[in-house]
Amino acid sequence: MESLKDKIVLITGASSGIGKACAFTFAKEKANLILCARRYERIERISQELIDKYGIKVFKMKLDVRNYEQVQNAFSSLPEEWEKIDILVNNAGLARGFSKLFEGDVNQWDEMIDTNIRGLIHVSREVLNLMIKNEKGHIINIGSTAGHETYTYGNVYAATKFAVKALTQSIRLDVLDKGIRVSSVDPGMVETEFSIVRFSGDTERAKKVYEGISPLSPEDVSNAVLFCATQPPNVNINQIIITPLCQASSTQIHRKTMS
Image (tube, rainbow, N blue to C red):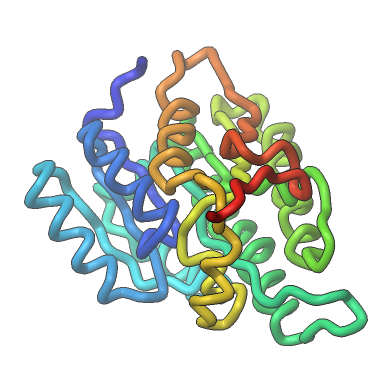
């Protein structure tokens, strides 16, 4: 297992869920972190906890990945000591709505496309230029099983995750001669704020998604991310698909009957 001590790991969407879990997982390995999120007050609290618990360095960045000008400004103003980014975890993403395409909300589509696709492209472009200059690096994209097979009412969200899969493969080709690794970790059902966001804060509806199953935890996914990041320098993990035991596909889920 390759040591991550003192390496710089940038995580988008670090304020909750998989992004937050990745922050703690990498901090345990003594990596220094750049934490990005729109909800700055959350990453302030998380950063202090990580500093107190693990003695690492943390650089906080309020960032809306959808806004390319904001992304450019953020990376052009990075202090020199933080420019040598070793690992980028492109985690920022979301689902909005759950309806057939002809009944869908255009604003929800735009939010998913802008975050899941454009946001990943915006951040990757800026970080790749730094990694190419440093002649090393690793991009790890958080995809989804929805990027491998669609499901009813998942149309536009699935399309964005198919795009993440295509972008991961394309970036791998683009940097093949640059010494940069590219991976994707594609989880199935993970219990985070994902469903609460998808259903616009309807917590009861969100709970029903996980009834009768033992879903993945954010830490299960962050451990898969860590596995990608700690391979020997000559090894590239191209893709990991990870699901809970009860989930065989996007539509095949075994739920225990509630007594």
